[in-house]
Length: 396
Image (cartoon, rainbow, N blue to C red):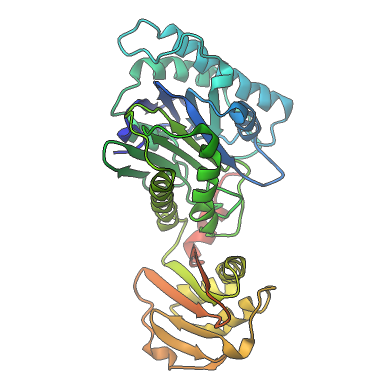
């Protein structure tokens, strides 16, 4: 169960020839209604790919009918021609969906236009997409859209990922589905690479953007794998209202939070070259912002990440990272534990390091600032030989 786990959606993915390896590289998700509410959250990188600029514009009215996604090329830093390619892609999707009217599984809405279609791309920066292959792929995609096509769509958006990332949340009469891609350049900028979420709940369109932003803040924004922010990061939420069930806003927010957290952790688990997944939990901070700042400083410390890769619970590197922040704390009051062993107590030597076992995949670092009631967790991974190798050999 994935993006088509929620009723009112069709999807599919296929090989259009955008990748040289012959794998799937073009996906389409269509909302068949009756509602077409949508929201999006995008990278805050000042260098934005053409699909991000386009999708921000078409979501201005809070309505979408479809999302077309491709791997095999980011369409970033491609100038006005790249933006024209994005616009053309949306037009091609709209044309194909209009022509599907009257077919056996027609997406509804003969008035669909390019403005109703968001575009997402991922892959190498600085290369234009082969639009002849994109056009041919779209024409092949639309007739194959189906209710159970979520798996194929999830496969088509992968780049260096080793597995698909999908999630599904079911409540009484309504549900949320989702798919994501990302294995590198995983850092907050509001999202982590490409994510599409669907729901058949009846939702308040005026609340949808804030609900999505809140969910991203608590999930994708707190995955910080390698400190590198993408030019293409996108999270889009589509609502069909097909269940005819209107959950309470708080219930929908909780379900959206859970779905986004599930996908975020799946992204981290597949991070390039990672041998350990690390949860950095900061407790008793003066504010939530302080807790996040401290956790993120540790997550971005290459010295700390290398130590974990070497199975060394080096708490000195944790304290050194904390000390670079503007958070409110007293160094002499900090406690640090690795997998339950308090190796640092009162900012000084704690229990022996050799009591810590870091041989497993999951590592938990607990930082107690002893300075307030707030807490936050940031998830990261170690820095391995394989990460360096994969990115050294990535096409340029």
